[in-house]
Amino acid sequence: MHIRFTKMEGAGNDFIVLDETKGLLGLTPAHYRRLADRHFGIGADQLLSVRAAPRGDVDFEYVIHNADGGEVEHCGNGARAFVRYVREHGLTDKRRIRVKIQRGVIELAEGDDGRVSVDMGAPVFDLAQIPFDAAGLAPIPAPRADGPWRLWPLDLKRSRFPAAASLDHSVMVNVAVLSMGNPHAVMLVDNVDTAPVLTHGPLIENHMRFPKRVNAGFLQIVDRSHVRLRVYERGAGETLACGTGACAAVVAGIRLGLLDAHVDVQTRGGQLTIDWAGSERDQVRLGGPTATVFEGSIELPDELPADA
Image 1: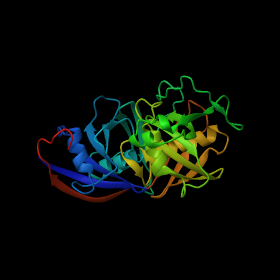
Image 2: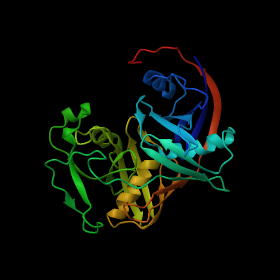
Image 3: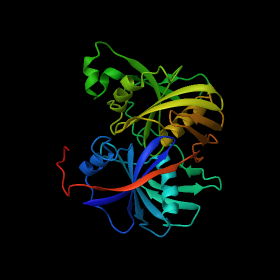
């Protein structure tokens, strides 16, 4: 099959965008993996499908697949790229659009300066909805936390990731857990440059306490309005930036009493801006740059083995 695509990025988080507004391409998880492969395909952290509006109160549908071929609930930086794509390709002339995602509707807007912001919805703290299995765990009090919010201890030896079997003793980390439409575990670190992202990241991602796996964030507080962040993304590994991860990290920092309502997040790929007023009902706002890198086409086999 012959597929046209657009390569985009937001703070270094890179995407393949596919136009399915006139019909689905019929891609399988194996196709998505091949497209995302940086050696045998195009290469990307996520693949974004632009689809026609399934109902009258939205402008488009937005479907996201990770580099491992699995469909996921949300991608904040991808949503910012989505706005730029539909406007650049003449699919809409609106500056503010409503888009259906797997778990609801989000609102996206492009400013006069070209920066794109996304209303990411309210964070979710209910453990069953994240989902996070806290059975038998004793939460750890956080001295400055907002209300009853707590950190949760994880024994990394209980990860489903194969490397956990080689640990000769328990390795304990404390994480804040929440959902931004997808699950996140946020760990406070002194310095993201030396944080064990590549070793602890996959162990947290695949921990038994997260039945749908989790995005693992490593958060360094610089001051009350500036942080540094690295994220090991579920199904993608460490990426240069993660929009939902930035939102989750800032929400966690605010609820732990460490951050103010407006925070600049420095990732390895660039700076994102997060705003959250602090109530469970308040929407989180994500802002930052996004750009088209190149466009092209690729030939794919009509069928690929499921394990390709």
